[in-house]
Length: 84
Image 1 (tube, rainbow, N blue to C red):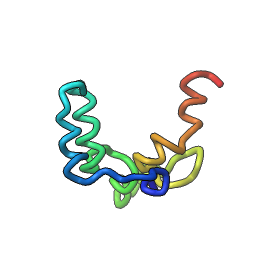
Image 2: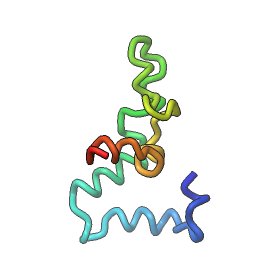
Image 3: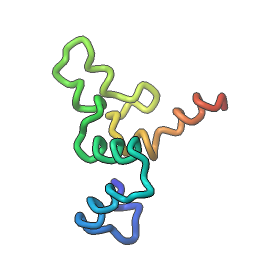
Image 4: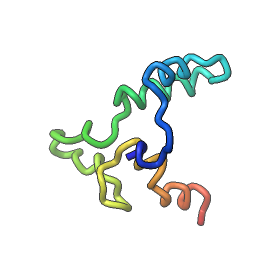
């Protein structure tokens, strides 16, 4: 979990205010909003869709495909993107 990686957790108020910071692009603000509202079709979204349940699991790591995994643990994504 992310809280185990940070020494100081920001308050909820600071997090929400930071999403509206003028230095963030619209795409970045949308990504942050979608990430915090589980709006991406990853992980648990696919459970219960009988023929598509496999999409909720990382094919390389065999763990649930959560945003945290995609951003911090899925090193294979970087390797395949950059041909390493």
